[in-house]
Structures are given as structure tokens and as C-alpha cells.
Length: 147
Image 1 (cartoon, rainbow, N blue to C red):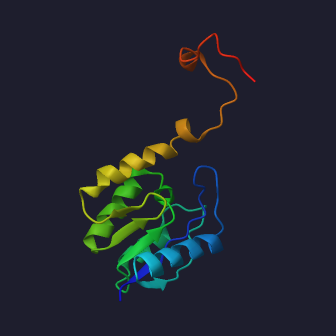
Image 2: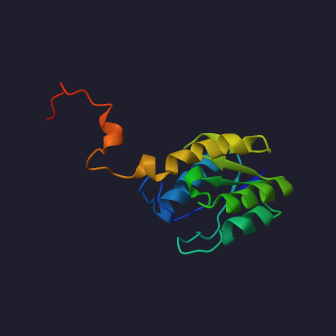
Image 3: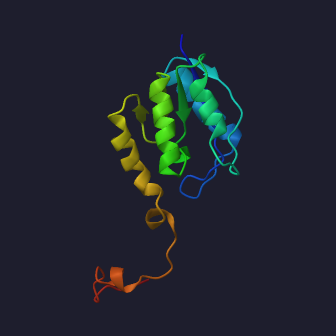
């Protein structure tokens, strides 16, 4: 039976931070029920970091077949760091599983699809807006009534 590590990151996903215990529960359930694998628990990655040290060490770990994330939004924000992660994943013949996106990264051609999902972490999609600027007002109909 293959072993998978559940990656726990305290970065927000669309403004929501899941507790480490909740991420562990979600990861463990996915690994044991969907992947039919052994759950390899590891320490959490913390928000204050220069590099995703825990993730890098998991990808180098020969005891596991892959890493499970609650969301692809837990990948590093920096594209160079993500490319390092992709390269290390492929070099060590691992898979990255993303539960929320129902997606598995397993080869080089998956990079484009995975990067496409990350556009939704952009501020344009995640920031709360209290008013519309002129660029967006063109989409409004003057006959609409506001409640």
C-alpha cells in the first residue's frame, strides 16, 4: 500500500484559514478513502516562511508516493518557487493531489492546467469591493433598482 503525506499550510484559501486539525482530517480522509493509501502525517508549513521547506522535504522523502493538499492555493505564491516544486515532484516521481480542485499533478503537461486554476487566487477574484470603478460601471443597466 502506498503512503501519502498530507500537506498542512496555514495560508488562507480565498480568505479562509482552515485549522491544522481540520486540514489533517480532510487529508487523512482523502488518503485513506479515495487513494486507499497510508496517511503519513507531517509537521505544518507556517505562514512566515521564505521557502516551503516542509513541502520540499516531503517531495524528497522516499517513503511517500505523493503529497495531498486541501487546495492548490497552498502552493507557493511565487511562480519560480512553484516551478521548483513541479520540477522536484517530477524528478522524484511523486504526485500532487489537490482535494478542492479534484486534480492530480503527475506529469509535465499538467503544469498549464494547474497554473490556470491559480488565477483565481489573484486579488481581482478575492478582494472585497465596496464600490465599482468606471471600468465596471459599463456593465450596469441604469434601469436596475438596488435594494
